[in-house]
Image (spheres, helix red, strand yellow):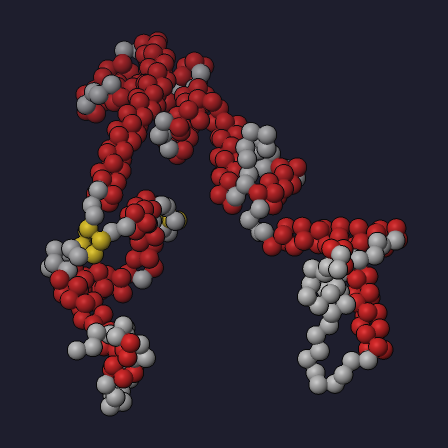
Length: 372
């Protein structure tokens, strides 16, 4: 026998060999039908090259599937950066966020969008105040002077500016009031100020008018000095409060993040520490009186009786937050009770057969148990 007649398979060509698992004998027609079915399968699976029209249809189907997948991903991904960026771009074009510069600011999340709105509100408020009060007025507000205080200052200056020399010459009573107010602003006792004004009145009209003009200029200067001094005092207090707040923040961070346990026996994780710090420092709103509130303050205000009852109850049973052993014991007792309940769910039955008899390997001397 020549080598070329040798077959790799013991039964000849693998494509011609068919296993018959049924008891019925094969016929030639059966083989032909099977071969035809295999050829059809080859065509479906790509055994034959598709025509150009079929290739075009396949390309269109594949591209449409890719587009559908991309659309599904875009629709399902509500937090995609493009969504917030596109929304911010529309708001900018519509004039709702006119000061937003998308080339400088990236809007990729709801927090970025919220920050953009806050910045826009601050920008609009600043523009309004500058138009209404001027640059000096806005600067005064920035340094801590309240809007009502600055408006009062403006009204006082406006009133003083409206008093001209002609008015002082024509209205003696107004001139006397200007002189009296000037003396009071200088710190002179009211009774003494009254005597000085009466003395000037008796000295003649010319002396009265001259003193009135001097007092008017003095009042204007005093008013300018008053608002300037108020700005300096408020700015100094703001800086002092800022330093104090920074110290409080640092002390708070050290108190929260430096301790491994706040309550004995209950370890504190990094996540809990950050959550506690966030709960204390994050502002969630204002009270009806305008006081800034964190979440705890807000919850207490909205349900004061229940909140304080639970707080003082916890305070008393822990001896002023000093002894949490009662709570710890209660938690341990509860854990043991739960464990006992779980154990009772499992049945332990004795079949009466020794353990080594149920171990198939014990007869060889190498069972899973030690046999004594």
